[in-house]
Image (cartoon, rainbow, N blue to C red; front, side, top):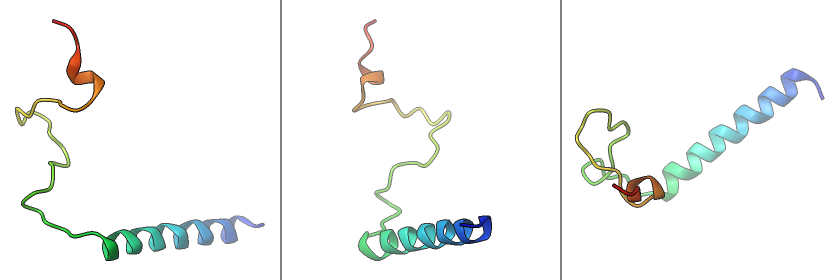
Length: 54
């Protein structure tokens, strides 16, 4: 396989994956979590990082 073929297959896979995701998901920007919560005051929850002992 050449680099051009491998790169083309990789890009085609990524485009297909994004297309599948957009076609099968209901996008609602008002209920979506923040993409970047830097300095927003949002507390970490749901993971082991949020359950650290005091």
